[in-house]
Image (cartoon, rainbow, N blue to C red; front, side, top):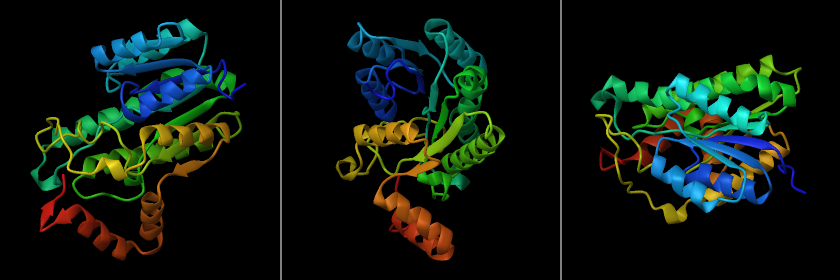
Length: 268
């Protein structure tokens, strides 16, 4: 029997990438899964893939507080409670701050930070009752500001700071709070990243064949939940970036600049 057998696991942003990989693994392990996403067609395809299992899928934009409440309330009504909440939904950006509309930053914060706040707020009473786990899917950008991704970095710094405060508040309740930081992972987040106008970029120049797969990333996340790890930083490059930024910050600035700028132009 798996650790997740009969556990109710909520995953935001489950129609693509890491979220979808988490769902595939959890259903195989006998979990009761609830997920949400903005794309009706993708959620419908997901439900058709799992017609004979316990999967609750709701169209929901996590930047909308009322929709988050509806999603969480319907999950509790369907399954009777929540054991684990994985705040996975997120968007990124590819634009220099000087060129960007401030609305781009707001959109990213609304999804990446406030989306986690809303869902956690409504799920927390049930998670506390079951002494469950709250997870934030963060990023190396939550430890180290990345050029061309200033709003994304801001949202992940905010997410980690908020989760750390929440973990301290809940220290004596039996609720576990953690965040995970994938490095470059094969997912739709780069294609869905916002440009300087707030429109979807639609493509990425990065070679995803050299990145960790979403499936491997999902395995690490579930193992970390089971072992109640404090944090999880994935990939050698990711661990190296965190280490360099902590002990050699000036050198880290130069290395990051060289990585993200080629011939003076930002890699998007």
